[in-house]
Length: 249
Length: 249
DNA sequence: CGACACATTGACCAGACTCAAAGCTAGTGG
DNA sequence: CCACTAGCTTTGAGTCTGGTCAATGTGTCG
Image (cartoon, rainbow over all chains, first blue to last red; front, side, top):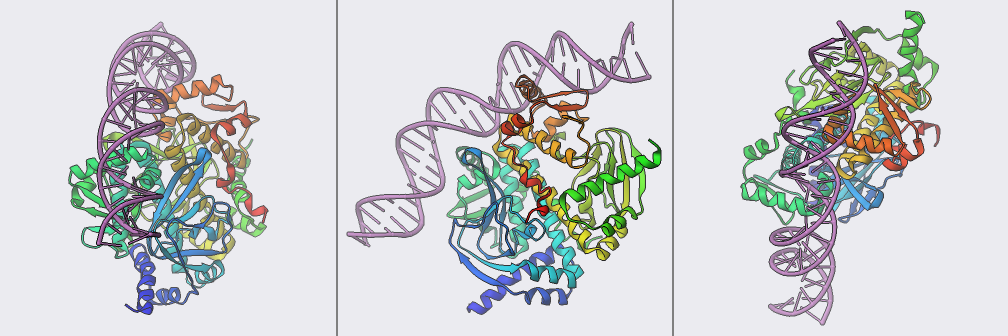
């Protein structure tokens, strides 16, 4: 694959994602592909944007995984979201000047930075895209709500199963599912920081899920052996992700 | 107070709130006050909008308290957010057709329903208001993120203290703080459903906070005796609420 | 005056945490 | 090509925060 075609397919992740959540026209896609991008590569475990920053660009993930997190008193960390290619994790910075959390890479990441100004004029000229991007941030919020439910009212086992279900749906939407597995370069400590558990308990929970033959999780790859069973275990209902719902109605 | 002036002051809550988060001009205010409203009164403990609904209006709270919540398998409930006058709890329905959670009253509530169409044209004609409303939903998301942190990495005591801090800041912004107290018509069970704790543990935590002379909470009123101490106990940093930050910069 | 909902208390339990040690595994450098 | 290392995973033992169950106060409202 040439660098050129690789970049094309990387940009397509965003298009695939927007397609999965909004009804767009060819001219919208064309406008997006015309956006000026400043492509940068980051190593794994690197802070891309930090709490307190006032970014003047948004960050589109082209390849690799990132997460948003907050460090609180006593050095404890809470991961707020995982991000895949096609995501714009700091889209909110368009209207919220100061970051209230950080954005960090998990794996090596290629990211494209888009000036706020370019996005603002895109949005002014293409109302459908304005709606799509707003909708994108609203789905982001819907995912946070589901995380609150997982933290508040689900067991450790359900919580982690639910997280895996969410990621598998989102990875599928951007075409990165490979059969029944996908890359997921996190440690059990990361999962602990995402789920509010201790690393030890995450480990025990994962072993239980393996014994139940739902998943395996080795060398940065999550394999889902029993998708039905996993969803059942998590009481997962994908509607909160609002994928494709515009097609119905 | 005449019904007329009461409604004026009720509408002003929205203006106060928008003022606290965005820089608006007189014409923006005028446009908002010209919105067509269908005012309705609901009894306490009433579901206004339910999960699965596809509303064609947004709901502006004029007076009283509401909350958004989700009921999950086994009848467990998670409260996702508390809402005060001036809030538009289902603003997201403008771009997310199907509700993924419910909106319910806590006290008697007066609410004004605004047709999606009117909001859409308002937004098209007044870009500053479009930004303000988008920003409003982004702050909503920022609050969810902080709830995730509270659930994941704070103790019961810190969590509830943090919740009280959030509410006091938001109540203050809409002018409903009365000295050091405000109406907060929830039961300890509601607080449990918001914080992911059991009602019994909420009770014990509240007693501890009373013993520490931080608050009292009786007959639907929360009094904050020691605002500094409460913030310290919660490790509360109000910046995530993004109030007034537009004034700086 | 009841009735009902809510708050409080006590006793006991369990899911998840901490600490600490031991086992793996993927890179790294010799 | 292999030994070493660093970081991650796994395991065990003991603890603790917060949950459950159930009884008893308390207050409010018709």
